[in-house]
Length: 241
Length: 241
DNA sequence: TCGTAGTTACGTACGCCGTACGTAGTGGGG
DNA sequence: CCCCACTACGTACGGCGTACGTAACTACGA
Image (cartoon, rainbow over all chains, first blue to last red; front, top):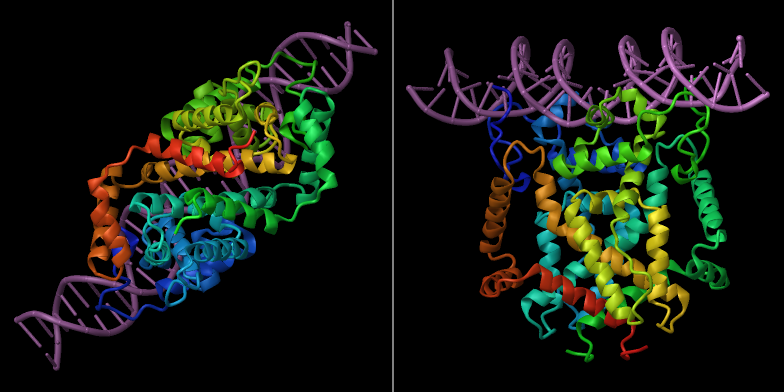
């Protein structure tokens, strides 16, 4: 018998290896790291079992000794980079500052791994590092006197906002991968279409906005910081504890 | 010559057909509707060119007379269902009410088309219906005396929040498609892992939360409404015009 | 001590996918 | 009226995830 039975299981509960037989040449972590390297370099669509195997220097099917299905590989990748959060020993006591820092860290991680925002919307669950992250956030929010459900909403909203923001910024760049023309050409052609439509006069409000916008070039970092601040404020409008 | 040159172009600027030659058997809209039907029924991953052609009753390669690339089909699908927004003639004058209604409509559309939230993160741009939507939102926000950039942020945040919320709710169900076991089994096995981890004592805050949570079963609709309300409030904290 | 069962490694093969390319037929404009 | 742009679509290529079979290897029970 070669494989395992296809019974419901979570990758986190599956032991990496049993005691018998020859020592594996690699570890599950090796496989995941290779996949992350490929995704960082060439985009998530470049992560195929054959490519990961080649990066690792082994046969394609050998990977299935470490990872039961491709989808689990995605989940392992998300968990691996979620480990990049640097969480201090103890929360500072200022939950706004702590959550703001978390949001900025998350944003930085998603910039380091441009595939993350997209994959997280599909392959996200209670992985070990997700639990570690969640536990840390709840610790930060301990001083906030609100029901537990609201704290979970707050965490979800902060995460979701970080994801949505970064995904939006990266959409064009990621979409341009594998197109038969360059990202600049894509952006130019889309911009031209937009301008043509706006010039048609059918979108007066939008036209007014575009006429006003170039006067105020915006700093994405600043907008992000403002967005997060406003979000946190909305959860404790009384300037609350 | 069969195809067109691979020059940069946007699907929206591409004419559906030129005058010469035999009448096409279908329209671009027919193709897109078929794709949407398939995605609604069997998930976005079931939308393949062969499958769409079969649904339509034509040869696979005939589709390329209507749609230059698969990715454009995605964009057309998003635009098609974006047309389901029902936008009144004129905004009501109460921008909070209008934006709240928009958010709820968007949520409803994403429930009708469970693939939408995922595809939008990749294949979203200034499509005709996106422009119509944006123009409407800007009209709603006309009474709000804030700089144009902030209004765009508001719209983006509302949309992003709707997407993130729905995507999160649908993650498990969508992921379960094509798995060798059922959604219920998947959820059970993930729940069991979570409980096991929490029971380990390594996550005291999370354990406390889970101990408290079952006492207060939550209504997703209510949470959504609250979230949107809070979000809007954060953009005009002074109860502003 | 030794057989054997449970591993690891991995080649082969199947059925999908997107789509490039070539060919045949059709019908409107010069 | 005829030419050629256009539609329709069959075939084929290179890629994908992964089921399955085989061979080599090692830890454990007898």
